[in-house]
Length: 534
Image 1: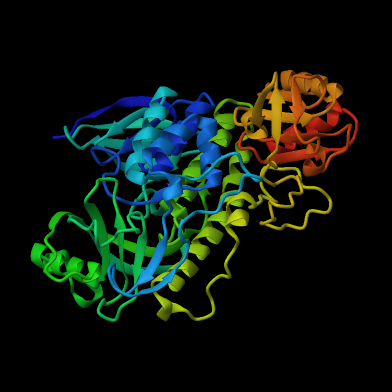
Image 2: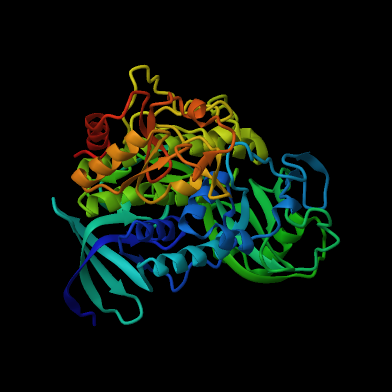
């Protein structure tokens, strides 16, 4: 019999300890806000799911101090991860997409991609979140919640003891995935193409060294009439262990019980293309592929991240990346509101900024799915491809927590090879030296606002305004002394400001405002008040 305990209070309660939830907890901790993260399962994921951290994600992980941990948890990027479209793993290859190496963008970012799996990444994020003050309770299920103008009451149950308690949170973050309950209970619907397939995932052990020679880290998408729908194959982090996925059809009355171990083994053998292959089935799980985006990413004090906000096909590898970045962009805003240096209206920008991006990435992955696995779904309504450097390093927030300029055109993408530096854009990359040490401008960002300028007068103004508003803001003067030097003497052009100007960069390294005028305390204060809904 369950018992009910009295309230405890937390600033932020996060439901779901996947990539989105652990990232949100970690980045909240980075900004000094402790959170409570609850997860109904006993551990983080033990399934071979999303692999790979794109450049923008690695920038965020660098800010959190875990990029090298995550990089070390994956395999060597130089080994590549070809995407192979074939009739079977050992059968005729129809097309190979990436080839031997991933693209590099050293002129756009100081980071390289990571190749860690979700299975290995989540524990790293959770450990860092704990280091930064988060509490994580596994085996804890959300039963219900009620919100009012001042917070959210969340009923939780310990799945081991059956005990229930109610926690009062200032804000609730829903990271409970595409099968979670928080979004629907918050009254938020979805739009999109809906559920596309249901699949069975089989993890198995087999000696495939000769079969996959040269493609040890490849991702295979299979196009073969022998498969009734989609099928794919990928390696795991355990040598000799692999994962195969194939469609099944509940709409025809099929259930998992229709696939005993020997039938599963036969399907796997067809996917590999080796009749009679000796193998051992390790685990079986049901999954699905859908294209859904929430109609809103916030409802009052409830905010959606990850698959709860946008469920997309896995083709393209950006589902996990987008989930982590949701946490990165939401955390500083929650911290600002909880800390009292921003108004509650700042959180409205979570929807304004992340929903259009989530829709774009979901559309890109749907188009990838058609190209790689399900050409029969092509009908001309799928999205045109966006170059990866634009989708990952050139996306913009023209109508979010920024001060747009008079000529703002509302574009949500720009070519980072030709940065504008305008508000709503990713702060352009360049290299600096400080006391003889080389560092990327990225290393100046991530904790509080930064006023990037070449003017000592603007630096004085920044200190004055930060003190008056109680906002974490510091100035970084480039070229004012020998301490911080622009290696290429080109940073003002990249940021679109003159010699007397300044650029205000948010904690998430997006440009919030800029000025080419001489130092002006009133202008800077007005910009911060607008961005922060003060």
